[in-house]
Image 1 (cartoon, rainbow, N blue to C red):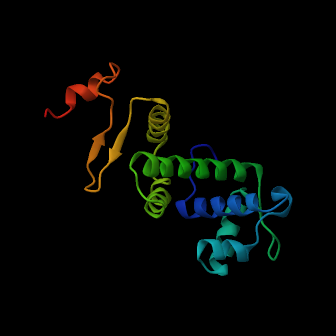
Image 2 (cartoon, one colour):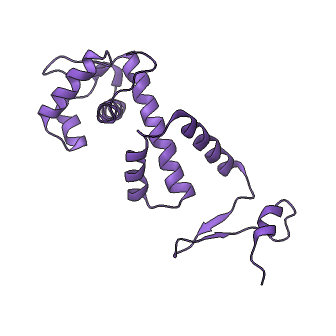
Image 3 (cartoon, rainbow, N blue to C red):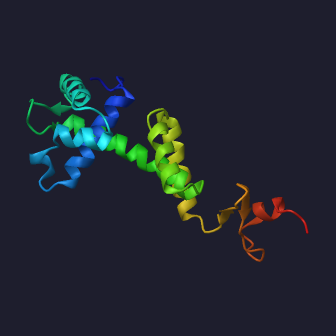
Length: 168
């Protein structure tokens, strides 16, 4: 697999699941994940898991032997980490910025993580970092899905909000 090749979103989901399951067990890099656990976590059949593991093995992303725990290769772990990081970034945006509940943020992140290009992800990361660090961004989502900027009118730093605030 070259740097320009992309694996399918379905196979990315398998890698991410193997990564998470391996991370949950002690000695993750030596024990790996079992196909039964992968199937349960993803809600798929063991036959589907077997097919995916064979494909991932052919791509050099997992060490797979039937009836044994599957382990990520170094390359597989690198790809799985990248997928998990993309998910976390999109989830944080959905949850922290858009104010979605956990289930909605998770569902949206699970779909969107696969389709966002590198430039979009880069901008999203920068936006989230800005949002987390800027003390003047204090908007609040209202029940009617409208945004209210909760700025301090006496703060001279919030000129943009003041300029766009409704007059009373």
